[in-house]
Length: 103
Image (cartoon, rainbow, N blue to C red):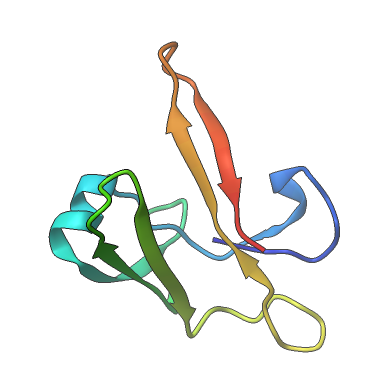
């Protein structure tokens, strides 16, 4: 999860708030996950957390996810965060590619 400070396409230009990594199968099988955000060094990202809720529909080609971040670190000058999420998928060559970025 990142705090977007400006219209920049390069990820390193934004503030890193923390991460939680899992597979889609973990999300779907749990229906609702609430986990702390973790920094790159493996330590907790303050009190920041992420909640992921999955809803299974009759059409199994579509998945609806509800994601929210709570108690995120304040990264902006005026004391708020503008977080967004990125979804990546692993290609056949083993490299990860961006498939979606939230607002």
